[in-house]
Image (cartoon, rainbow, N blue to C red; front, side):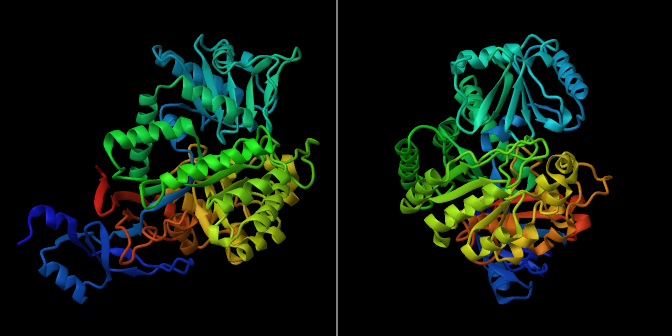
Length: 550
């Protein structure tokens, strides 16, 4: 007779609603039970099936799911792992509406936490401070270094003590040139004034924070991110800006505690737009060497799968590259020159790497599609991140070329788009977040949160995707381009199978069918658009073992 441990690894989940919709987004269908053995789904079907009787006869443990919905484990298709963990302890400015609100929240936190050495904040939006900011607006709040990230992570604002520390650690002065694709904001005398934008954040401020944070602190942040994501129903995540400052603690954590037993990580390594073409291609070559060491056959829980290229900025900061200028007169170019992107993508393709291109503005989106069409193909499952203002013509090209539309519905929440009509005009807003166009054109969809730039909970993300209404402000009646809403089936598939497909993980996860890993989440949820936001994650299971509640 099997022992207790064997029974725990072999069980029948009965009285369940096991999600069985196809991966192409059809309406939800359900099975009533699932058999799991040794981390693998053995059978999905009816309680009266022969396979169920056989499992019970063999001593399988019976788990009563009490009629709850069982979904595939969610996979966040786009996030920033270390920043997620660190953000859990940052001061939230999400409820702020103005500079006065920001100052009040930071001052209150400073008084309540006299012993922290630095004050890190998140959730600032440029629309909260339309007149602009500099260090002086924070200097009277506290003498400690203060660092404020925008919600999208494309700008950092600090007080004078914070600016001094960042300049000392990163060797920044008035003579330091702006990095390609970004800028160090300066005063009339040419001195840094406390604001870093775009690639100046990625290349200066992110490394600064890593340098003043110990490896142990970064390891703890990663563990905290895994725990928080398990609690939200995730069993996998795709990091979209991997670098040495994240990889080092990630590997140390894995080496000290063994293979991750509650989360799988697939990583795209961030490319930097600096130096000669040879130096850029050398970055690709290094990633290719790492990918040959860390892949599905050697480290399936933590893989390097490709390269990430940030091709433009964001609409709110007027740094996304558009075909026509912003109402402010600004008309930025993409961050990368097309000829450099061509060479980078071709090199990645030859090396067997995937390519992920961040493209938000319509001009950058067109360039990104052109570059992928010329230099790679659907066999590599190339992807474009965000796709916030795609033309109808370019939306239709995605599916034809096999390009994954990697989208973050929480970014289409109307509560954070109030500045868009002023910046780009109502006519261009009509093409915002055209997700249904992507799906109708046959593009694979991968849903993510872009956490910590946005809330990471998957059910609210699905709510915004299917209703185009606000999760942040439920009372808000604004609907953003309702014709681009996804169906329930499309949204769930994108947040599970689609994200798995996007990084070649669909061979072992992303759906609930025999032969795949038993990665699933037990939810109390009604799978209709208006009810999704009321759903609750009750349990998360990774490879057949419950990881939440732990």
